[in-house]
Length: 147
Image (cartoon, rainbow, N blue to C red; front, top):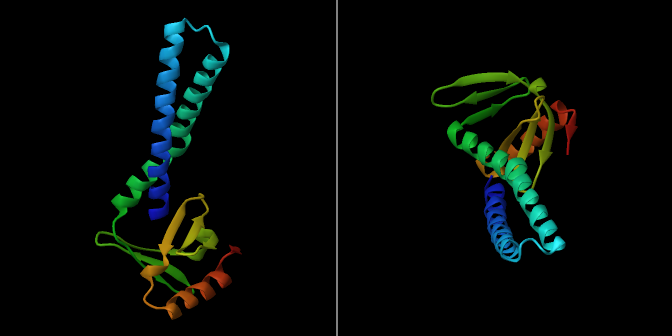
């Protein structure tokens, strides 16, 4: 999660620079009466890229971060039969069949469910290295795809 937030923060800096370039090129073109065709194309391209960036990258990730913050702290209990989720207001359990893919990254595990939503489990949340190894064994037995 922290990596995603850092990437968004860097992306906002790039987006702010692009916005400054768009405004500057637009002012120059307005002053010159849109006489240079290439400056107009650059401006149109940059505006389109900026809109695409906001609509299809920054906005969805910011929404995911908002939902992630609203969920609060959870306790996951993994057994070979099921997964139990405990929060202060909710207690739930589900079968392993809810998840169809699992990925192990350097600092976390990512479980993808049938709706293609990710559940991210940081490795720091496990009590010991033996718990991580036990979780790997469960994933290798229960997941169709485990990388």
